Length: 496
Length: 75
Image 1 (cartoon, chains in turn red, purple):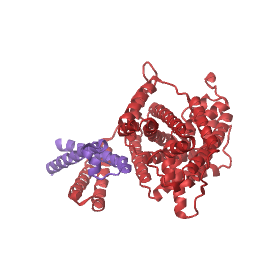
Image 2 (cartoon, chains in turn orange, purple):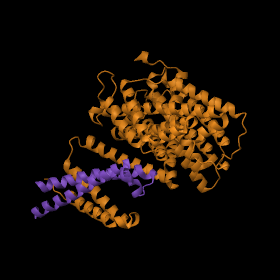
Image 3 (spheres, helix red, strand yellow):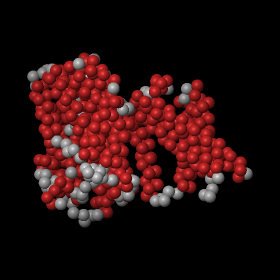
Image 4 (cartoon, chains in turn red, cyan):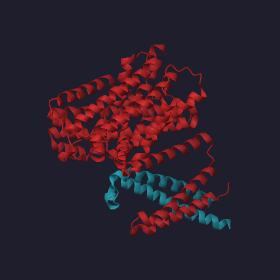
């Protein structure tokens, strides 16, 4: 094992940046700027950096004390045991599925942007066949993931930083329109500000890749916390500068909307000309392909780990005879990526990925508090400063970010939250069936399904007059009544 | 009494199972937008994933619930 720990501090920083710098900047800035907060989106980015830094302090303490493979899953498992770790693993998997699907959509969009420079007719063809391209991309990446193809993370990070640096350097010679980046001190404006921060949060969460890679880093107790803090500060500065220039180059006063070119591509095209448009489109394509591939590997690793611990069917742990990769887990996860990716719902996926990650962040902070109480003598090479305020602040901020988009009644956020809760519901049922009752008790299951049926039926009967058009009224009432009666019959069924 | 209950279970089981299958078919039609169903039902794109999830869950639970009742009716 000792010879596997080969990365020093600089490699660890690149690992952190490599996890975080990616396609998200192409996908998320658009909606945040044009539809949510306008220029104050930049302050929201800064706020995200602060939240990320606070939680990274908790990650640092946990990864230094428990440098085993598994990250969040391992921390929650040691702190709370089975159920919470199962939740953390599932949420992490879900966030990765949503992120992978979003990356697949960005791939098609950036491909469209690239062709818009050379051949607008091909751009139309690309956008019209987005679903086919997404399926094709995922299928190719399935083969590559099964074959265990390694990514050139260092190269991608270096290329990205170089492109951003050129972009920033060329903006010096360009007159940027000054913008007010501080949100107004009104309740509405603050609600929008927090909702924007929630939406932009996935731009930072990839940094935890460093925690997952902790076992391969020299002296992890010292280097992982340092690398996490340095890469968070670096990333916040880079994002802040790039967003500031982009907003200054594409002011809202000019009447542009987010319907055409994405913000970053438009800014690059304005400042650097056609070269900028091409450069950023190529960067977006590489970043999104790399992110879909990483997401598939991460998902298979999470499913494999949970399967190894008995939470999921053993088949998901099965390795390919030749390539030694978990091919069933890769294929299973990829189907979800295709499903959500072909929906094309960028904003929904942005929120959904963010919500999953924020819940995992809250669980990691809770694990830190629990471990300090449960295992006070655990060797901790790094301790999060200002305990218990740091993890408590991390939990409160995560929950605030979860709540604000819904308070704002952003339909995409509501849709993402309810979908996530629905999937968490499926996760809970799976846990119950697999762990609480190893042998499925059909009577219990029947009563549970009956209860769900009655609940759904009642909801249908009550809500139908408000949400269903008159033409479907009778049908929906009938469906509701059938569900209620069938549910009652299942509930009152005898154990025989 | 037991005989009536068995018949009732079978009837509602078949009805609920059919509702579940139809919901699944509707989910597929919506997902692939066959016959322009998304336009017919006026589903905004941002609500499509949520709608599909709700339909999918409703479909699964209806089929399972219907299956239990049909099994009881056939005993």
